[in-house]
Amino acid sequence: MIGEGIASSGIMAPLAAGLPSGEVALLVLAIGAGFWLVKEYFGMTVEQTFKTWSLMECAVSVVGLAGVPILGLLV
Image 1 (spheres, helix red, strand yellow):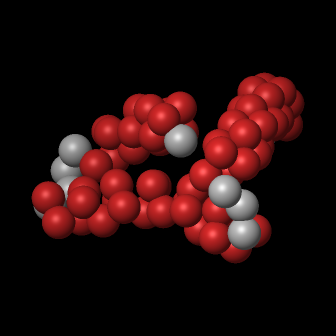
Image 2 (image 1 turned 135 degrees about the vertical axis):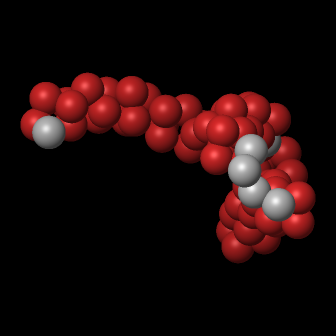
């Protein structure tokens, strides 16, 4: 979750800069809530969720890293 939070904050920071503080707080809660939603939905422990979440985020990163240049050639 720490890696996700760091990545999400780096992406969202420029967008959140112009938002009122209440909306920034909601944005932070939304980013963190994804982890707990996955944990509860699949009935996993926190340790299992960390392992699964890390693997999932790695897969998403690799697919994104490969997919964006390919889409760049098409657009």
